[in-house]
Image (cartoon, rainbow, N blue to C red; front, side):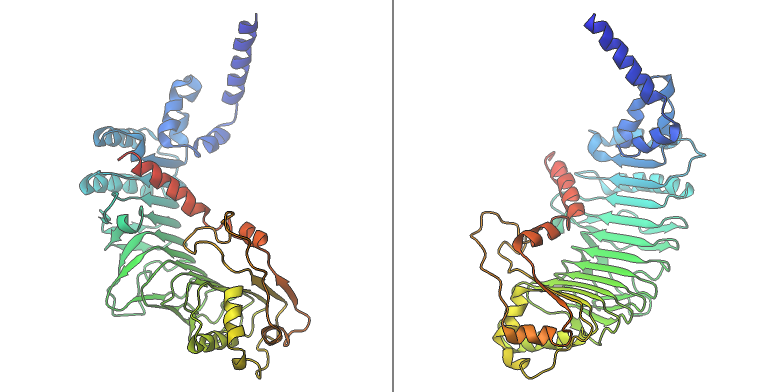
Length: 422
């Protein structure tokens, strides 16, 4: 009797899922690997062709044992899709000892299909464990693509990209573990000149190869994130609103007259600015291991004066300690901050600075109590007596940084899975 009730319950639940509208089922299938989506075709006649109208492709070489099987699957998917349905996104993952010519063949086939179906979001992860891998195609051109992500597997497994792109509709470009060849004597052009509508750019853990450093010049860029780089470079972005620089100390901000938000993290060097930023509202600045020497303190004081328009300012305690050790530099100077509404001081870093999550090592001894001398406090706050002042606790700092590298963590899990197979 119980067995019969179980069969009835399973049938009812199966019918309930199958009775969902197609657009809901397509939405569900868009969250899973395309191989698994295709496998739903055996569930019932209702599901046989459902996968063919899913607007997303997520194809990974991880799911196949041989290149022949992977190639056959890709051909079947592209030929079996409903050609009347456009593609919103394509995600491709290659790994291991797969040869460059094979990847080139698959990429050209998939990209030709994707661009002919007006794909808007393209995500390519490619690399061979333990070595740099040259990207197998030399040119990407699309009238529809709005978001492009290129991701290598790590510093030793980066994608080398001597290619060009013509992406007129592109608004967002994310580059992770990519080696960029930059050999352009005309600084008005640059790497991104053929992306006229680019608004959001992330360059993370990338290596720049070229005689003139890395020159970021774009008239329409709004949001720029630069992480973990060692190349000298300049930023000239007249429409930039938000800038994040993490551990890229050789980068200099030349011109960003409309910048409203600045986030800067570095081990030693303060940010290099060539002019004041008159429209700044928010600044988060952390220098974790500053040199306790007079020239460094002078650089920090000079930088703070260039940030005089800021309204919401966050500094870390290590930076405050440098000011306290050279208090004679500020004791007779007026506060530069006349518009300040909020000042926050982050606690001293007490864990590995290379960790993704700062302030997070629970096994460390209790951190020392954060303090700030009156001279430094007066220098920062006297120009804005109505500003709020907060000494952030370690618990609050941990909570604020845990979400910072979610994308990096997700990619790392994929890389671990890949490397675990070899």
